[in-house]
Image (cartoon, rainbow, N blue to C red; front, side, top):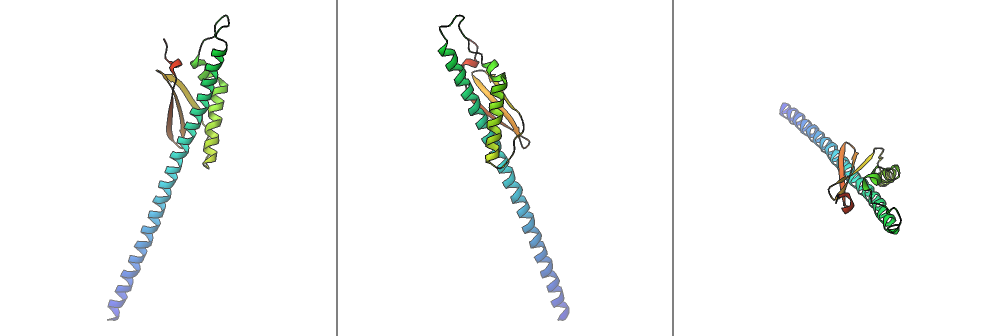
Length: 143
């Protein structure tokens, strides 16, 4: 009877050990899933903030052109130049960095913005993922 008790204790100890390993493994997986979700949310917030900064620059550019519509020579809307300007690029990058910081992360990458049809596409990489946003911008579409 003593041998059976010893075997039962060994089996019980093994089962407790397996259970403990399973719990540790599940916690590790849970932490990874939460970290990935946070990185995804941070990237989305960063690209949306960058898109808002680009939209502000675009609206300001259109307002400036409208304000000088009767000037000679007449100003033209140049969205490609606006998107390539260092001021626009830095405003988008700073907005993305601020959004990432508010989510407890750091963003030190670049924000890319370009015309694609009648939209402005904004892209950035955060935590190894590509994040995209788009703005309606009829001035991108050549007439």
